[in-house]
Image (cartoon, rainbow, N blue to C red):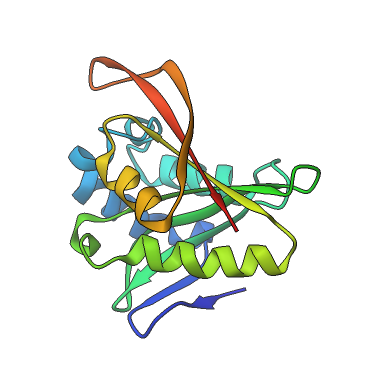
Length: 172
């Protein structure tokens, strides 16, 4: 299923055939992405980009759905409904966005539309997780009205520094 979010923003199902485009996009944004995302250092060639995509689209997590983000018809990142837990009526999302698409509210617009979709499916809350230094994701979560509900101390070392993982929850 593809989703038209706005005139300039849409989501299309992520496919392994997209690996070349994503490898180039990761290369162009490597310095930015590697500050917050553990997998960036593992994507070093076309084969590892294919593996990155396969790991997402073949996730064993319940009801996961992964999309490429198109901004002004250009592939600009990845957005995923990482999982949906029917027992707790909670879903978790994850995303990354190329620097050229920053500052346009792309992730907030996508998340609002996905929240509507998930609410129609009976999901009652959305979880967004991000490292403590990822101010862009923290800003998105707060702008959407999500509340900081938990912190996992010393979650991951990134850029030579141990960082906490912040968990934000949005009631749908």
